[in-house]
Each structure stands twice: as C-alpha cells, then as structure tokens.
Length: 375
Image (cartoon, rainbow, N blue to C red; front, top):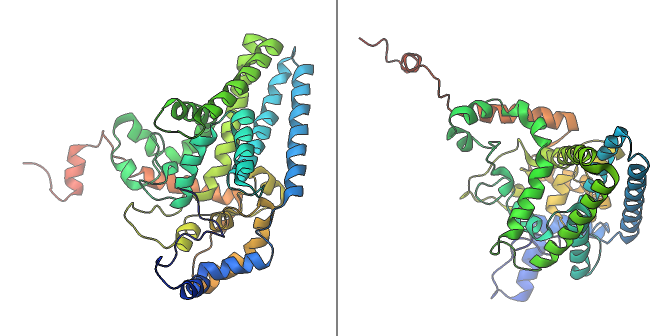
C-alpha cells in the first residue's frame, strides 16, 4: 500500500468500463483537474540539482559539526554541539522522507536505497518501520484505527481516548496541552525505541528487514564509538542526552503542527480523497527559515495532495491548491508556527477535560445531576 500520488489518484472507474469513457471520467474529476494544472506548470518534474546541492550542503555541515566535536572534546562546551547535530539529523530525516515519497530520483529503487541510507545509516531509524506507519498516515490522516500517529499511550488526541483514562494518567491528560512541548524532548528516544522494537518483530517488517538492521547497527557502532573515544563515558552520556532531547524536539516539533488539533475522523467514516487530505492538514506560513526548519512540510496540504511532488515545488503549488479549495468550498487551514502551537495546546487541553476525575465528590456529582441532598 502506498500513498496516492499525482499520477496514481486514489480511486478510478470500474475495470470493465470502456477505455475512452474511463479516461474522460478521470479527466473530469476535480482532483484530476487540479493534478492537470500542477503538471502543466511543471511542478511534478524532478529537481535533482536542488537535491544534490542540499545533500552535499547537509553532509558538509555534518562534517563541520563532527570536527567541532573533536576540537571541543575535552571541554563541557562540546555539549552545545549536540543541538546542531540534532538539527542536522532532522534534515537528513527530511531527505529520507523525500526519497521515500519518490521525489528525488526517477527510479523507485534509487529512491528506496537513498531513503534507507538517510534514515537507517545516518539517522538510525528503520526505513521499513517508517514506511509502514507513514503510508497508513497518508492513506487516512487523523482517522482512528488507521492513522497510528493519533494513537498514543501518553497523549490523548481524541475524546474517547481521554474518557477511558483513570488516576494519575487522567490528571495528566486534563493538563496534557501544557505538557506537550516538554514531552517532545523524549520523542527522539521514543522514535528510536519504536523503530528498533518493530524491527526485531519478525512479523512486522519483511522486506529487506536485515538491511535496515545492518545499517542501524553500523550507525550506532560508529556513533557510540566516537562518543566514548572522544568524550568518555560521563561527557559522552551527557552529549547523548542533549542530542536525543533536541532531536525529539526538532522532529516532533516539526510534525506536530501538520495535523494535531484538526478534525479526527471515526474509523468507519467515509471521506472523499481531497477533503480527507485537506481538512485534516494545516499549512504553516513563514519565510525561508520555517521552510528549512520544517523540511518543506509547512506546505502540508500540498504535500498530502501530491506526495511525490519535489519539496521545492510545494510552495509554487500553493496558489493552485488554495484557489481550488476556495472554488469548491473546502476549508484551507493556514497559520503561523506560534499560532499552530496555540491551537494545539488549546485543543489538547479541551480533549483532556474528557478524562474522568477519580477524586470527584459523589455528593457534588449527585447535586449536579439534580438528585438533591440524600435523606
């Protein structure tokens, strides 16, 4: 199962329909008309030059960061370099994301291997694990039972998840919006744990499972050897903590504004492709810095409509998509980065209020229900 692309719309006519009528029908759907517009504008064409420059620049910055770690190895100031290292790893994760969506190369195999190298070897996350969860997310963003990104044992992303909570977890859930950003500091470790856990489960990932495992072993062998050799166990552990905390904040802080706080769809609800992708996505306004920090995912609506569109073309697709949504009466959600987090915190706190209070006074509950004082 793969995410829909511009060349592979999510639905088509029956197989036995005459070819001419089928072709005309595909051309007449709103999504096909929008697709034709962006294709005519050249926005689905590969941007290999852009990506080679980006790959080279990101690799050069990584090399400079490692050189800085070597130079400052005997100083506690080296911990500060864990911050840019986390940001660099996030940029490589974005490159892996782009390759997995076949944005970089024409051949599927070239994109797949690039994605594996960026994700597993450089960042240390399983490509197979990520593809499984990410394809489900693209298939049905914010849909219960399908999109694993809204299923969490910690944060309740919808009312029913909050209502079932008790005790200390219920207390936390009622305040989860305020805890959300601090929780992102642990997301880096969580991503690595989930990636490794699924990778070790024989039934979860079958295709090239051991390729991922081998690349990840190389990643951690090189990373931990350098830490222990250059920094020693104490300073190395502290550096690891800074790096993982900032990686979680960077990765989680980038992906959270894309969908959190937008409608959550029941599992059995049927929503057409365009509305499913647009109504559950949020764009983030901003200049080059926001675009760099978010890896182009600030154009989340365009990315969900055209997953294989190269990252640098997403902003150019925005006017077409925005005009299309206005014409068809589809809400196009766009805000600033801070505005998105304001909405996220408010939404999570509202959901959290559904969590039951185990210390609720029975008398107060009876009075609220109109039962009056007991005799």
